Image 1 (cartoon, helix red, strand yellow):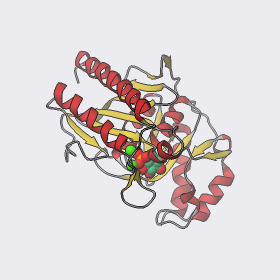
Image 2 (cartoon, protein in one colour):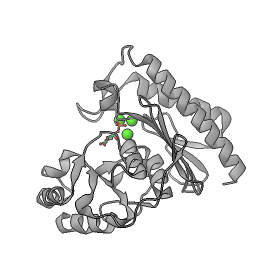
Image 3 (tube, rainbow, N blue to C red):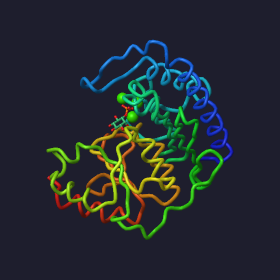
Length: 268
Ligand code: IPD
Ligand code: CA
Ligand code: CA
Ligand code: CA
C-alpha cells in the first residue's frame, strides 16, 4: 500500500473512530433496544448496529472500492483478501457496554492484500486510543509502546482468559488449564478481546487466550501487537486467518511457544 495513501486512510479512520465514540457516549443512556443473537447472553444493541452503519457509510462514500467485514453484517463479508479490507467491530465488549457502561472498545483493522496495515482500538470511556501503522510504531494516544521484553517467565505472567477454559470444553482438557492457572502469576477476564490484545501490546497483560473469536474481534489487536513483537496463532500454532473464526493464543514472543506446548498436552 502506498504510504501517503495509507496515511490519509489512517487519518480518516482515526477521525471516524473518535466521532463514533462521541456518538456512543452521547446516546448510551437512551433506550438501547437490547436484543439477543446466538444465545441469551449474546447481546446486541441499537448502538452496535448504528455504529457499524456509520463506518460503512463513511467508508463507502470515501473509498467505494474498499471492502468491509463487520460484526453486525452491514459490510460486504468478502471471501478473498485482495484489495483493501476494513475489519470492524463497532462495539467490542457489548456485554460490558450493556451492564457496566465501560470496558468496551471500537476496533478497526485495515488490511491490504491480506497484510495488516492499520489498527485502531478506542477505549471509549477512558478516551484512550491504541493505534498503529505497520512499521511506524504502536501507540497509546501519543505515547509510543515499547517492544515486548524477550525474557518473560510464565510464572511471572498475567494472562487474559475466561473461565470457560476451566470448565469441560471441546478444545482442551480443563485439568491441564487448571494446572496452567496454577503456574502463571494471575489470570484476568476483561470481556473485550480488542482491549485484551491492546493490553498485551502495552505490557499490562502478558498473554490472552480465547477459544473462538471472529476476525473483527482481533484484527486491529493483532496488527497492534505484531508491531511490538507479539505473536498470535490459534491453539495449534496456525497463523491467524482474517476471513475465519478461530481460537486465539496471543502473547509476548517469549511465552508463546511454552503456552502452545501446555495446550498441546490437553488438546482434544
Ligand atoms: C466479544 C468480546 C468478548 C469475547 C467474546 C466476543 P462482542 O465481542 O470480545 O471479550 O469473549 O467472544 O464475542 O460480541 O462484545 O463484540
Ligand atoms: Ca457481539
Ligand atoms: Ca467483538
Ligand atoms: Ca461487537
